[in-house]
Structures are given as structure tokens and as C-alpha cells.
Length: 204
Image (tube, rainbow, N blue to C red):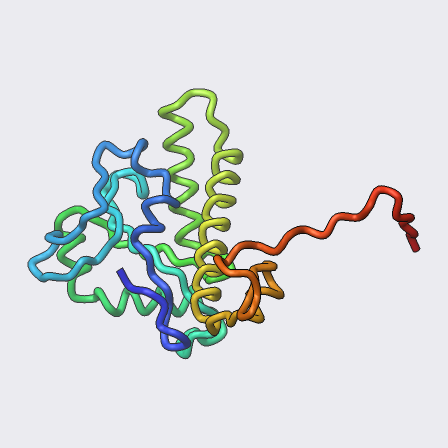
């Protein structure tokens, strides 16, 4: 799993991918430990499933690309997609020989998907509709896209928060009401100021 590397590259997360993609229940074969697919020690995918492309297994490599990355160019998701293909150019033929399609699934850090993502999700939703009667493909796609967007933005917010400078005692008091140096001991929140019942309140 690769993590955020500032402005040098994308964020790639296998743990998030397991949450985002609803392929486990659709697939007769589904793995998230994909070491050993080739004769190298590389792990060319986050998910190995039969529910992503028609008629074959698919090795899905999930990646979140930052538009601010040094190699993002004018299209971060397309640039990341091409980097994935280049990075695994020596193992992709081995995967194909084993009947496995390698497919990068790229989103930008603001949630914009690469076209390969849309094709993969559409096929998975159609498979779900066939296996589970009464399932609406548009509704399922809408739900998956919403959950993916939420997951991406939550991760983005958490990463941004982790890069902020440590909050001092005064800043903590201003933000939360927790006492700083010289205030009451124990780190308890200051008492709430209540308006007296007979105090007139004017609205402007």
C-alpha cells in the first residue's frame, strides 16, 4: 500500500479499495491479497475478482491521484493510469497469460473517476442486477459513487488535518473552550455561560 507523497505522486490505498468496491458478494472468486500472481514479488493489484470484467478475472489496482502532484499534468487520473501501466509493463503479459486482466482504477483526490472506473462499476452493477432480482442498476451505481466520493473526501480531510501544525494551549481554548495554561486543572471544558431568564434579548 502506498501513502501520500506530497506533490510527488498519488495516494494509493488498498484498505480503502476493499470498502469502496462491492465486488465481494458478486464474485465467485475474490481476493485482496494478490501477491503470487506472477513470478515476481510484485503485488500488481489490490483486488482480484471475477466481477469486474466479462468472462475473465481482473486484477484491480486502486489509486487516488492528486491534481497537485508533480507528474499530474493537465489530467491527473489519465497520467496516473498510464503510470500504472508503465510500472507493471513486465508483469501484465504474465497476468494475461493466466487469464487475468490488469485494470487500474483511478480517482482524483476530489473524486473524479477515470473512464475505466465507470466501465468497471457499470459491469459490476449489471452483474448485481442479474444475480439479485429487482436491483436497479442506476440506483446501485448512484449509491456506489456516493460512497466512494464520501470515502475519498474523508481520507482527504484526515490527511489534511494530519499535516497541520500542533495546536497550542491558547488555540485549543479558542477552538474548543478547553482551558489553557493558568486555567482550571484537569483539562476540563469551561462552564457554559447561560443567559439569565429575565435578561432581555434584542434581535437585530
